[in-house]
Length: 147
Length: 209
Image 1 (cartoon, each protein chain N blue to C red):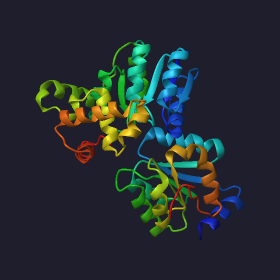
Image 2: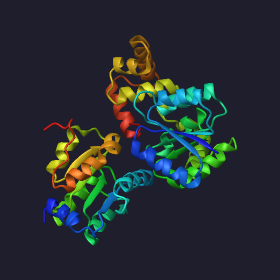
Image 3: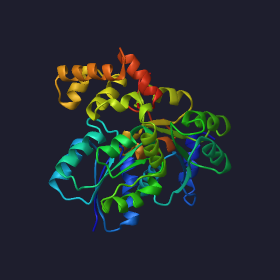
Image 4: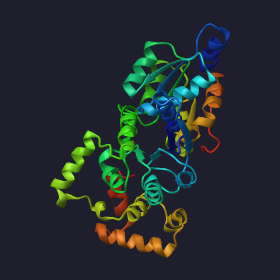
């Protein structure tokens, strides 16, 4: 199942709740992210992980529609988590959030299998657009990314 | 009703902070700004009970804003939060008049206690900062090189170490290029260094950038 089929599963099964797994080592950032997501997807179930191993094990333990992960986390970081998730659950879309500017990280993340990349500065405005784009089976690429 | 002003360039962090504050103070007025310049203006034009400010923001830093606020509103408590490890900046920030220095990884658990303490006019000191303070008294001779820099020199040092040019720094602080060049010479002398590359290496080793 690719990520588009993943999304169709979500949209066609109205009873199935949108399940989002977020990973960031800072509780305050998780709180902000969760609040932002619940404003748009108010019935969503949001799981949380504080480091790379927890993210990978939670991603494997349940079914999720999307993962939103910080790039810098204890236990390996977002890139390591992305690689492990893409190896074991290739259809699960991963959106990477980072404090680093988009260029050149965005291209690297997309090459590694991420469905999108967002700088945390832009995340509050663009997160929901990015989520919708990814859940629609597309990639979300920042306009300032270079290839 | 408590009036709280928060400053952070990351909207997600501001959102998380606001949520946390409103859980504890449901009737609070919480306003947000995303840069130091707006923060300083807001503290002058309106009355606040407490300011919560990020240390690293684009343009003028939180440390710069803190110094300015302490000049214009010395009684206004300012809590500084940062992604950096506590020991690198805490003492400098507390010395500049902050009521607390909180790492973003612990702020979730400590913010409310810090606000209570700060509103009593006291400083909120975390156990790891207390330890650092004790060390500073004991090992005064083992100071880091950068401890000798003034706050402004320290700001300039970090920007040079991060690769900013003298003209970019001059522009950011509204200073002349000559003044920034003078700061650079003074920093090199105080830190016993000869090049920008040495500054960068030092700053990376100490986790300052």
